[in-house]
Every structure is written in structure tokens, then in C-alpha cells.
Length: 425
Image (tube, rainbow, N blue to C red; front, side, top):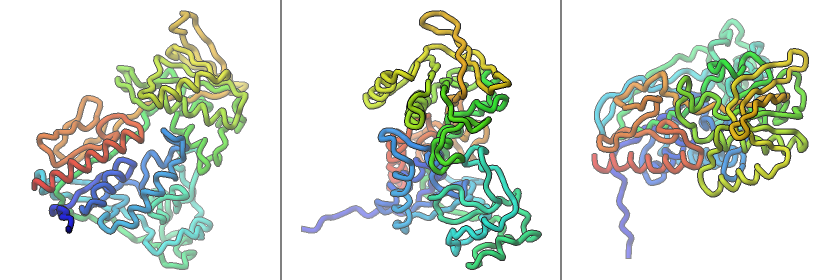
């Protein structure tokens, strides 16, 4: 007896954003037979997950999950990747959208073998935004070792172009064209999934916590890069002012979150991110003292609660219920004094540490710059899904703060919603 399988309905799906939610959405739709266009504004896929050292629930490196997804994308001809792409306009209605996309030039074509000879001769340096400006790359660079596509890209804002031309001369494969220009393409798609992700809240806006003023205060995402083997310090956690191995570190929870002057909501992941980062420090510095200042610890689910209890048992981790009011620096040592009121005892605490990590929250990329489509947002800038209207959907952190597991689950659901749009077309 032959099994009858329903063939996919006609139409394509556009996924905007190549982070973990966008990758999951694209793969789930493509692997059941739909054509997918995946547009990413960066020159690489992977989003914020690519910047992590480890992620829950298994504390494995992002290379683990991303490498599998990149392989699945390579093996699936139904997925068309458009990096350095920006959606400029969306017209039409559910089931029939006309989308205008601007593709910015990479200046490096598919013949690139990532041999690195162009980098060796490039005379210009730039700050690495991937590492939150904690180190530099050349004007022609690869964002990180396993970046996909496996090609270099040129930062045209600093490149000297034909005035220099050294990278062009060094390339044996004629893979570099400094005269490449931006181009615009139009797509007709039946459904759109916005997986535009999040960005760390700007800690410099939080006046009382000293970020940008004192060198030894970093953010939680900067800590991820410091701990990552492919980060600015090759995985060694060192304090920025003098590259010293820190003997004491304070984590300041809700840095700008749950604060009507900054982010009024809980960003969901910050507590677990800081507890996870205590394990980074403990692995390198078994005797370091770690102080975690918190309003309350939010560990959602049995697995996270178990992890929280495990951290509490560490005799060198001190969990202090109290909101940090201010910080100050000893100009001689570079040490930071954290001032807070213990909410349990009522006493004022002044704790001197060698380094401070601010647990800054998630802000949607759509907070200040809205997307060129007919979408609804809540007051915090997250996209509200209108399932009754259908056609366009927000996945992952474009819809609400979420961890990697929740983002993947949500993205699978949004892939199904997009497919249903095409089926009903």
C-alpha cells in the first residue's frame, strides 16, 4: 500500500534574521518542502548565540548547535541565504507580499577560500563589534572562525579601497572586487517571519553603575566574549585595565531591567546567565570570591532551579539580596566598590571587588527603529503577533525575551504558522 503525502502548497516564506530563531524557522519550513529566503543584515548567520561561550541547558558551546544548523542549510537547496540584506519595504497582504530588499556589498565573492592572505597584507584596523570593541580586526576580516558563509568581508567605512588595493593583489583567486555596489532585489512571498532578535541594553545609559567610566566594569555579553575560546583574550577571563586574573568579581543583576527609567520588564535570561558565568570564573579561578547582587532570582523550570541550587552550594559564591545603588573606583588599584542595601538584614554593604559584571537586559532591535511593514508593537518595542490577521509573524526575541530553548520552540511554531498561511492562500 502506497502512502499518500500531501505536497506543499505553492508560495515562498521570507525569514528576516539569521539568529537561532531565524535559522530554526527557515530549516523547519524548508525541510518539509517550502522555499525559504533567509535575510540577515550581518555578513554572517548565528546572531547573538554565536557570541556566547556556552548556553543552557547543557552548557555546550554555540559551535555545537550552529555547526549542525549550518550543515543542514548547506544541504538544503530550498533555502536561499541573503546576508548583508535589509528589508526596505513590504507591500501586499497575507499570502501575497511584495518585498524590497537592499543587499549591501561584501566585496568578497564565492571564490574566497578563507586563506587569510588578504588579512596579512591589510594595513587598516577596526574595532571588532563581534567582541564588543574589546579587540581589533583588519578592514578585511572574518567575524569569527566558524562564521557562515565562510567568506571574508570588507568594512567599507574604514577600507582605503583602490588607493590601497593590497588585498586585491594578494588574493590568488580573484575573490575581491572593491568596486562592488549595493543592489536592490524584489521578492514575492506568501508569509514573512520576523526573527529580528535583540540587542544588549546600553549600559552607558545607567548613570549610577559606572559602565564606560570605570574600565573594570563590563557587561554580561562582554563576559561571554572574554570566556569564549575565540574571544579577545582567547578564553582567559582577565580584567580589562591590567589583564590581571581577578580574585573577586561582583555581578549586578537587573542592570537597567525592572526599572521604569530603562527597561521596565524582566529580561528572563539575566539571572541564569550570571549564574552560568559564575561557572566560567570558577573553572579558571577556583578560589575567586564571587558576589551576586540581586532583587530576586528567577530560575524558571525544574532544570534551572536545580542549577541555581547547585551554584548556591559553592562556598565562594555569595548571593546578596539587594539592589546596587552606586559604584566607585579606587584610582590606584582599579578596584571597584559596590554599594547596596541588604534587603534581608537592612544593612548597607560596601563590597570591594576587582571586577564588576552588569547583567544588562534584552532590548528588541525594533525598540527604536520600526520595521517597514504593517506590524503592531507593545510599549517596549516587541512585535505583537496578530494571528487573526496572519501572514506576518514574530519569532523568538523579536516577540518577547527568551532563552535559546524557548526561542527554538517558538520559532518552530512560527514556521508552522507561516506554512498554514500558504496552505490557506
